[in-house]
Image 1 (tube, helix red, strand yellow):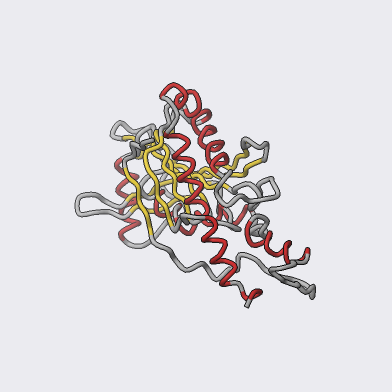
Image 2 (cartoon, helix red, strand yellow):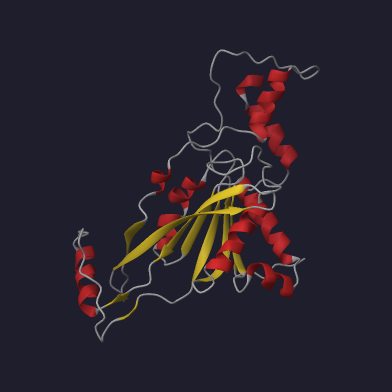
Length: 287
């Protein structure tokens, strides 16, 4: 098996966020015994790995459906005000679970020289007018971007959700006029399903979203890269491996003209058993 990718980026382990991946409520006691575990202990172990509490967020936490960001200027280019939209959608994975996802994408516009100068001045002075000049169709206008653009599929970590993409990926990538798709894996966030598989079955969720893009946005999406965090990094690796063994005809049948071009892997684990031992050894319940 070989992968012909433009780039593969690994990043080292980072300390987890302050949000605990699980919480215990009520006064129920957990009787833990390695020789004869009680049902409550087994339930707790299951919550550590495959049935963690879902990340709690509201769809409004993903921001407005339409918004703008400034792309900083360089020595040879002026700052640019870029407009974007968010499309929420649902796809079914190979297990029949409803996967909730959001597509953040650039809005194709034609910006005249007058509008460009006005927005560049606003950026230089630190202002961001709430009512920017209207986009016109003047003869000196030009497209702000190509018709097709690369898209990054962001795969969150265990017990997390698509809102994490707003922290890591969305603001960074949109300024370079890339699209970003963030999804809730099965049994996470607002998606269907009851159990997580820590990266084993999650590649099917990524493939379902990828195929949706190829089917409904083929005229806009040029390529796909996978950005995974922890469990999401493992899912991204497995998804890439599944794609790599397909023949060209099958790749086109599944994903159309939207190839995989890169991987960004943040804190992937190499062995699930080693991860399980680490979680158990660091959990206060076993201290």
